[in-house]
Image (tube, rainbow, N blue to C red):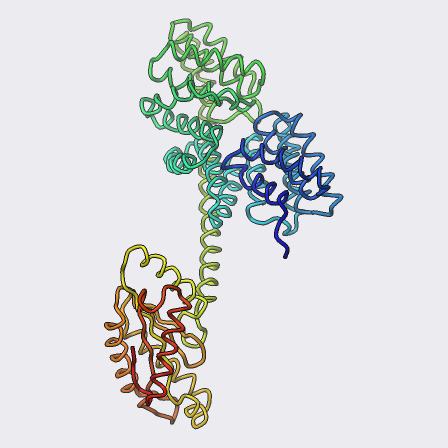
Length: 551
């Protein structure tokens, strides 16, 4: 495969930096676009359009993003690039979400998942799963949203995709708060905070902080949330975290109210109300609820009731049950204080119905989470088992040469820094061909298994025993000098000689091997140099009579 062109390298860098450093990603994508147009590279141009469109989704708005994403979809379709076209459609589904059409967005995401037919790699599926989770949340199906988020999280974790993981953890934390699973949300968001500290993604950081503030307040830890709420108010990225579903200023205002910081609450709420006027939706319900709480605190009960009634009239399918419950509970309390007990009783009944629904959603979400975690653990176990099997010799159960290559290189790298010794021994069974010729290959296989057991049982937990190939074995002795290793390999030679190997009516003892031992760093500073050195010494031992260990 030819090396990538400068344009390809640049656009790949831009694409891969979307979640770790979005503004750098955007700049690189624009630079790649100019280079692609100059040199006529249609594939680079399409990926640059896609990267730019994804940035515009988060930083400029749906209208600008739609133009870039439609261009990307057209270009990828012309190139017959199914993966690229699918990712462009994923972005266009997000445009529908931002325009307030969550149902159309959901339908588009579902179609993508059904039609992609394996064309998307796990990290590509992250975009689709994260998107469909958002559409489910907007449609009021928090448990399904959480299910998709857990599925996406399992995929990105297996690839150590830290920026995508931070994004999913933030979204998952927000949804867990919505269904009342605050302790789980706290754990998830703490991990998200740790990950985002490594990234150049200030807007994601703001979103994570806002979700953490929300979680702490609902856990009854409003005082702990206060410093973060003040951080939100001062963050230059905060104004951009605004949508029909809510904004960071409602979160900050609620925190200030809970801490009796009335001046700060009013400042945050004023901004939240301005954002609500632009967006409507749950964002407006939050603003009305919070204004009612301010009025009630001032003793203006009737006006507070009026705001809560307006908030109730604005309920939609996408209004979070958490918010519906807060409005109904507060409205019931205030109408009871006003002496309107029949109305208050009816409101209280409505509140308990919502409370039970929310409990049910929380239970369902936890059930989904357990199911998905079980499936992800099963898949991980299968993958780990397959990986382990790929590194094991099927006959003896010892590690194979592939494993030896990786672990020896890692030990050399580590011990080169720490100055610790390392010994390498190569062993070859003596007269093994004669055993096969006299007793057959099945008995020869049993000899190899028996020797493998002797070597495994006679070495320490930190030592590495590998079948190198045929009747040859390689042993690694971390923290041992070559001189120490010679003594230990001689003990293994004695144990091998004394072992009696039986299969049916056949019984044989006196099996021996010849071995060569060398040490790091004095005999070699690379894995290949050490193995070659030990192998040369091994054949010297063979030539000098076999059944011996040499240094």
